[in-house]
Image (tube, helix red, strand yellow):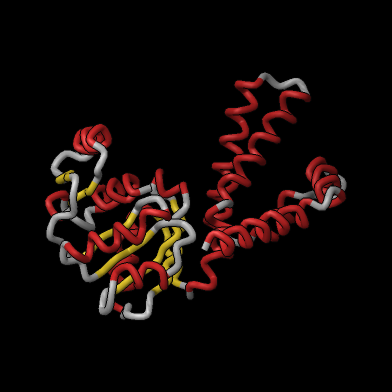
Length: 249
């Protein structure tokens, strides 16, 4: 995810390559990043800096926050799942601005959905700074920290729900006589087209009704999904993911 953000920042020209420094302690990974991002400094230790994006494993966040502050950072943006603002602020020390964010995997193709929550010292300029970074790879929603778990349950885990739907549709198409390769192409285009239509027109209920002619093929399929309580299943999935996010924090 950190690499996705660097790529997004470069592509969007929010920052010039010369303004970015990537800290990576593993030598092999440093070599990969140097090749991936020409013009961006890739180093093994924090250089002098004013702001830092923490894109590390949750257990490594306190140490990374402390190291960034020791190098001069007065602003920290964390994208580590489940690590609370209070934990990061305690590691960073007094007076350091912390913003917590939750991006999702479509950020890899610059179509992510991210949420940001400000820490106790964060002002409007600090939130704008965090948003400018995440906006390079998609949309950004501002919300209080206690709403991030629900965001995780919907948007953070949501891509996997849709990939599961894609798997199921491919399997169903194959079982009805379509070749696997054709089914995969059809389902990919189906999801791309439907999501684009939803993005442009914005009302899923209206779009569903538009496709569902009374007595038609779609109505027959929707009736089965409603009978199988698909809505309830998605609700339970989001609830379970939200609760798990709370537990991790």
